[in-house]
Amino acid sequence: MKLIVLGSGTLVPHVRRGAPGYVVSGDGSPELLLFDSGSGTLQRAARAGLDWRAVNHIFYTHYHPDHTLDLVSFLFAANYAPPAPRTRPLTVYGPEGLENFYGHLVSAWPSIAPRRYDLDLRVLSHGAELRIKGGWRVNCMAMDHGESGGLGYRVERSGRVLALSGDTQYCENLVRLARGANLLVCECSSDEANRVEGHMTPAQLARAATESETKKVLITHVYPPLEPPELADQCGQLCGVSIEPAVDLHSYEV
Ligand SMILES: [Zn+2]
Ligand SMILES: [Zn+2]
Image (tube, rainbow, N blue to C red; front, side, top):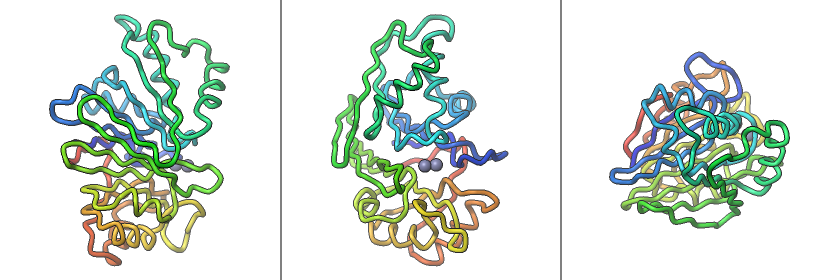
């Protein structure tokens, strides 16, 4: 399984870190799975050499704009990007509120409604498990992102496990989500001094990594002026798990 980071940043514009977006692929699997698609995700997919048209499954952790804006770009391009409109079915997954969210987008931009393909909106709730062609298994669990709710995703294929936290603060479900994972992609928005409700700090991440016995952590979603290496260092001093800052356009073997 391979993870490509398309955006390791936040809602804050940043020269090197885009809004959240992650592509997961696997040897021999025709499917690319896209998790979140903040502003600029499609452009960075092009820079990463990925074919955005090959994405048939898009998962949302929650509906904050920094995680979802490029759904509009994706749907618009699916209709009008040359040489021909999309015909392959597309499934979009997300927590409660997905139909409402999509309905508002189409009201604002009627031209994003599918012209030539089937769009399936799948609302997921805590504990849901999906099987996707190509040997993928995806489980989701409710995270703790305040009133915004949100889901974390656990992706399994060929005995390897990748966990994606989305936005959350420490919660037992995060530990369950990442249990024994080969890689946990986890948000760590701020340090202790600047702690934001509904988001992680290095101490919370160290606790979740230790309790879940995850093998390795990639730190994402760090609010400037803090930088991921600083928080990775702080976190690394608090636990024995390998902690790395995520880097946009880098790929990681899981
Ligand atoms: Zn966010
Ligand atoms: Zn959020």
